[in-house]
Length: 321
Image 1 (tube, rainbow, N blue to C red):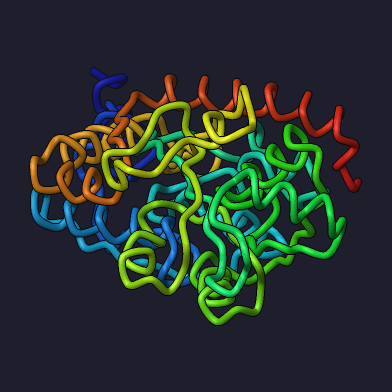
Image 2: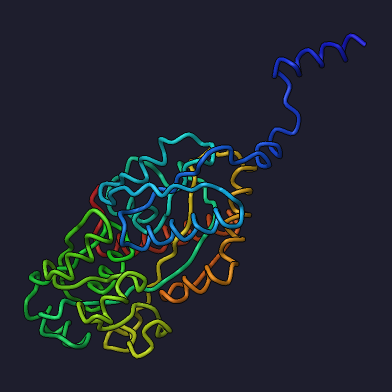
């Protein structure tokens, strides 16, 4: 009897918690969720807004897209310093997960982040400003070799979806394109459109409208197979660079130590969003393939990417730590 009375007192004082993990997941969220993303106009922002819209429609969750500069690992540092309660997420592409292999970052991906779900994979499009006198990959390679170190490309940060394919191009085509960093994919694309830079490996989602408007000229796509978005565009591999193949994964991560019940709750709802026909259509219309996953599967993708690019970066001598 005494033990029952003591238990009741402790329970009333909040010192005994029954089923804390399931309850945490079931009662989540109790306030708006913030998704950290790059500045408007880029693929990260596109992913954040599409997922946020879907979560609002199917679950009634309020999602706020928090646009932050891409350079200097600002986004990853902000996530690492956020409370591990599921209310702050980050759209993670190569700039977040692979960037620290190039330059020292304030966080360690596998230690400081908890994978939530993979969202999509997509190739990039090798695009040049119309003033550049090239209309094919072979012509670009010839010009780059004739003017070593003179041609430049814009990126949204180290390890991003427009940086990694460019370095792979440098390596396999044996050229020297110079990287110019901008504070987001949107500003990087604006630099290409204005002629401030010569070329960019832009995501299909962001560059397709500008290709159609002839503001930029598309030369090839980075994936091993042609994209349905731009069906007449050849692959880089088929255009004179054998073995070239690159597609970027996008996912959502939370701070490490976020309760598993919250991670699973987020994952369940995000996967539901990615199965909505209209959401899938909007992704596909931008040349992006939906790739929902479990947290564990996305974690495996991150580990594989780090191992693969770690070898490439070492071979090219690109690390600056």
